[in-house]
Amino acid sequence: MQLLGFDIGSSGIKASLVEAATGKEIASATSPEKELEMDAPEPGWAEQNPETWWQHIVNVSHEVLEAEQAEPAAVAGIGIAYQMHGLVLVDEDQNVLRPAIIWCDGRAVDIGNRAFKEIGESYSLEHYLNSPGNFTASKLRWVKENEPELFSKIHKAMLPGDYVAMKLSGQVRTSISGLSEGIFWDYLSSDIATRLLDFYELSPDLLPEYDPNFAVSGTLTSQAAEELGLNEGIPIGYRSGDQPNNALSLNVLNPGEAAATAGTSGVIYGVTDKPLYDEQSRVNTFVHVNHDEEQSRYGVLLCINGTGILNSWLKNELFNELNSYEEMNTMASEVAVGSEGIHVFPFGNGPERVLGQQGIGSQFRNIDFNRHSRAHIIRAAQEGIAFSMNYGLQVMHQMGLDIDTIRVGKGNMFLSNVFREAFTNTTGLSVELYDSSGSYGAAIGAGIGIDAFPNREEAFKGLRKSDTLQPEPELEKAYSSAYDQWKEKLEKELKTD
Image (tube, rainbow, N blue to C red; front, side, top):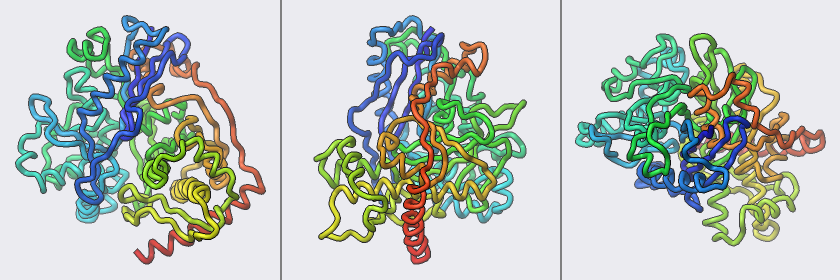
């Protein structure tokens, strides 16, 4: 039996083919070779064409199925991980009505802030664990206000993963976890957030019916099977937002456990059994993938929008692709902790929740043309990303989230020795590195959803830890000093802004 997982990110689409009996990844693929582009028709907006995601899903499916050990006829389940908080709109014929408004788009900030105040901050936090903020429900209200003719054609409003599942199965479904990330879920009533929908004048009929995360929510249609190179009828057994799924891929399922990732955005995701919330909604709480009637599991999510995208921007735009990421990481290691006084704020990818939805932009400070080189800028950028994640981690600690170890997949920014060192010694946490990925987690999730494993423990027998990083006293001291200087500059900027 083989399991197929797709990870639909904003920078690319990944697939993993996993052997259920051993948990071994047989093959993986990524498309396109370069990062997917985000369209920005207006400042602060971010859109992508959902049909482009599907084209790359077809590409990666064929690539993994051509691997030597792949057996298309043995694929027994499909899982989906996807970029969170996006909005995909379709008509009655399942045609996409407009480009997806994706996670880092800031156009609905004012709408969500207004709802937070008028519905009541206490009510919102108690019932939704969050401000409506810039999440999917607020984006849907923006469409109603600004594109009324298009809004009248909407049959269903979906998250990106729901769209992909629709393309696979022809069925329009979602999950409780997905509804919670869109702020469509009321935690106290354990049902749809009708008061918010009423405030936004949105019909509940626009939302898909929901299933658990681990559940068969449809089967592969003949048309999709032909496009992907698979057999008709394969069950779609799992779907999850990328960050809960990243936690699943690292077996982070219980209170006190945490996962991190640093791709386009930077995330720390901690699991708790209590419905915790931050009164300023700087970090956000959603339903975790293994939440059910027997056990409460919530994921507290810190997201820094501008993370790997800053590294990508340096490579592709500022440095005109003169260096590879590997070369950039080597250059960064040649500069001392603190980057000789350069401070970088990586907040150039839309409004940042951890900054109270302020969009202060990415900033490079204290550059000395006579002293500083490309290597200094690279190191300062990687340190700034680590510092920003630690800044948000302190909010999580203030909420009562107790974390001492973080598990990460060895990919993206965590491939850099400098970033790993900065992250570990700034946060003061033990960091466990695993050979894992989002698409691997989606495949494992599919196996759980179709009951391919005798128990949950067996599902993770293929997970391999490659290294453990511990803070070092001298480095902790150096990074603490550099972080304090960075934080002082940031907070002055926030007061000014």
